[in-house]
Length: 137
Image (cartoon, rainbow, N blue to C red; front, side, top):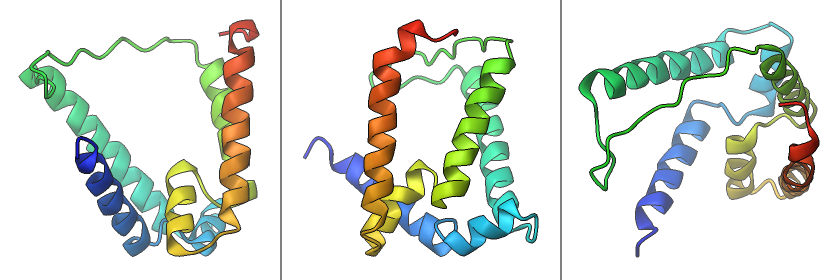
């Protein structure tokens, strides 16, 4: 029962992703072809919501569920590693038609072929974990 709140959050997240059509391969293809504003609107809304949330966390000095004040670490100003990481992430997104959230939503939606993408993502995460100490960041 301890993880029930996370399961419920995942279900709500999945419903929002399906209802907004953010899990649609067609919508993602439209985005990468610059044919529709749909996905840019969803992503832009998420970015603005995140900015407002971070501002409120800092301004109101909010605390987590254990009562500890939330402290956000300052970002590293080196932009190259973010650009390279974003490029790799974007290529994977364009190739598979899904980023990490929609991968799991699509499996829940019944697209079992997406398990191949999830296995690939897990393999990539595993490899990154093994070599990250040798990478230049």
